[in-house]
Each structure stands twice: as C-alpha cells, then as structure tokens.
Length: 114
Length: 117
Figure: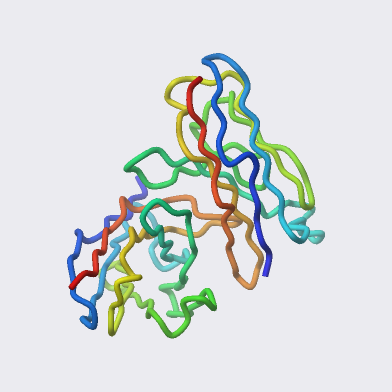
C-alpha cells in the first residue's frame, strides 16, 4: 500500500506571506500511460467537509484562487499558498489514487495565522 | 448544481445496526462512482468504499471490507453505507463523495455517527 506523509504537521504564517506544504508518497504516483500524477490536494476548514483544491498535482479546481498552486512529480509534491489570507486557515490534505482503485490521504497539515 | 445530500446525525448503542444515506442530484447519478470517507474525531481522512450505481460494482478499502456494506438505489439516486453491528470505534463523521479521477470532486455535508452505551 502507498503511504502518504506530509510536512510540516503545522505551520503559522503571517498574512500575505507564503505557505509551503510538502507531501511525499512511498511509491511513485505518476501514471506513465497518461503522464499524469494521481495526486490531489484538499482544504478542510473547521466544521466543514474537505474542499478539493488541486487535481493531477497541479491543476486547480474551478473557482480555486490563483494563490493556490501545486507542483511536483513522482513521489514528492508541494502545495503553495503564495500570499496567505485569513480565510486560508485550515487543514490541508494530500491524497493519492491508484486505479485499483485505492485512495490514501496524508495525515494533514494545519495552517494558522502568525 | 451537483449536490450530495446526506442523512442526519445518528446516536446508536454498540451492537445496533445502522444505514446512512446520500442522495445525489444535479448530475447523472449512474455514471459516477460514489463512495464514503471516514473522519474519526480530531483525525484525518480514510477512504472506505466506492460503488458505481450503474451496475452496483463495489470497491472496498481492505481495512473496511467486511465491516461495512455499500449499496445504491439508482431509482432514487441514493447511495448507502450500513453496519450490522456498530462498535464504539465507529464513532466518526462520514462523508459521501463523488469520485472523479484522481480524487473526489464533490463532498456531502457529512453524517455524524455516535456509538455509545
């Protein structure tokens, strides 16, 4: 089974500053037949369901602000919030998918305001 | 607008059975895999199971195989998750999700299940 890890566990960022979250998978999630990484990112605010942010490691979902970006390939991925806003305080999860199908989430990274 | 409307919160005793529901609307219910994700109190997310309502093909996370049953009724665009004998450790929020590779593009509001004697 693919294991997902995230770092850091939590971080505090000032308004307008950059937040960077790392996600690592125990095996490559790159689908060589499509050349796409089967990796998604979600944002979960307290008392709400997770909200999809990014699919295929770097494609923003419709309506997601441009300050959110995803990068990486294979086993190492990054979610970047370029200029943190107050409404971005949340827990962020990465998730891998394989065509078994099987889905595994990372443990989450909590983002707070400094 | 795609929506997944889940049934309300439940309080049950250990050993009792339970079936929670998720009604999809705003899209062709039979054409997308629908599933369930568990979130235990203060914890992360765990995928449990998927069903394709078109033919009731099911996929389970091995960790949940035999512990729960996923089903669907195409006629009312509703998916279900059921337990035959609840345990205290089943206490969690359960989210209904629609699968669009590589993840879940729509989420229900969640159903809180509390199992306590």
